[in-house]
Length: 173
Image (cartoon, rainbow, N blue to C red; front, side, top):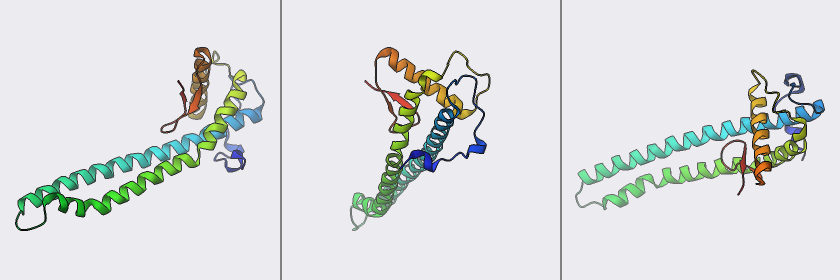
């Protein structure tokens, strides 16, 4: 499946070709649309990870409260540790399923990251970093940052890969 068939940004909402890009307009539109889509996905994944962190903190606090209650009500009842496990097992299972869902979302769109990295590498010679704009579009700023990282990786003779967790590209070893 062509990654451009599911673009988020319609053609009429794409910004004009910036002065720092000397390639064909279709190449810039492709870079822009791919980076915009990756950025939107990364924002969504980060939001889910924040929700997961808050839920895990809630489970931890609930566990502490249940433990305190079990200690206070120590009679001929089950051990406090087993009460905590029984009470929190469904919540822990739900958190695990949610965490797997977040990773699944991230892996589902890894093809976009690879396609973007390949497209950026192909059109890197059209990007002129010395012509830095005054107030670039947020997506243009991300493209420029990725191009700077790519040039840095080339200068250090290091590979560059899409980030597994987080946004953008990462230097390899």
